[in-house]
Length: 383
Ligand SMILES: *Cc1c(COP(=O)(O)O)cnc(C)c1O
Image (tube, rainbow, N blue to C red):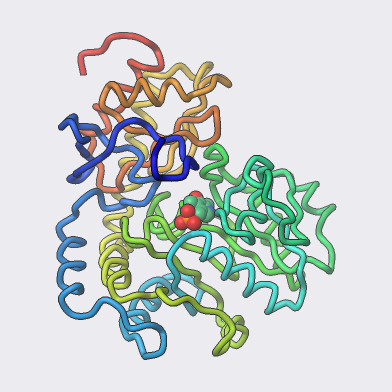
């Protein structure tokens, strides 16, 4: 029995070092890391610019709290809102915390309480974020939950239209449901949501914790849809592996988060800001993002070449790709891939999720697809 609580089902390897897409375990075995620490290490492991950023900052100052001005936070906020309709940022330390901030901001701003979220969504493990999560297995045993959340089927325009009324403060969703199975929003659903929000005082919260910061080939995934969120939550990729999160909001929301309304001790900590600024400077760049899109096309093309369409459904955007294997449970495939030197993560019980570093190379994609072919089709390959 370990001195740790048993709340994760961990694989029996420990990753001790990494460089780019490649990590090594305690026995020196190498793996291609197509998990990126669950869509976190967007610039790969030990990226020289990130190593330098944190080293330099660690020699200056680690922490000051939000008692004082933070030019670093201001600069980071400016970088994040530069190419979109959003205006202000608040920084915290994780995705769940970002969603808590988003929910609090929406309730306070509208003076209403009712939040609509979707089945199979995932928004985090704290009470508000857990309640927002439309999965019973995540709620089980922890009730009573936060009141006035409603879960609707994802991509169901009719159900949404029937559920919307004057008591709704916000609609909250992921553009691609990550933990829920790499489920991509339909154009029709995005348009319907935006139309509802345009014609009412309902706020739109888009949870970009997994899809944001270049993961889907654009700065944020909402840019590829009709959605124009009032609030965007971020975390995971934003600081490439350093714990960091935040929300972005429109100018109209500025007054709602006045002094004393919300906060966190570590939010926007100088170490986190230094790393996040370096990530954003690298990723929010059209050349980098075009490259992510090209690699995405390459990965999907290669997967489709080896996996028959009638057995495997390949979906997603950018470097967030799911493979559904004809309704089969994928747990064993994940172990098989690990044995062959490829780390992948499930998205729900039936989907294999590929979320490599955004810096992955085509050669690494070739190797990974070779292993995926081998384990899914149980054929021998020469890769
Ligand atoms: C991972 C995730 C979260 C929770 O983030 P934490 O940092 O684990 O709290 C929230 N929303 C989405 C979409 C996520 O993928």
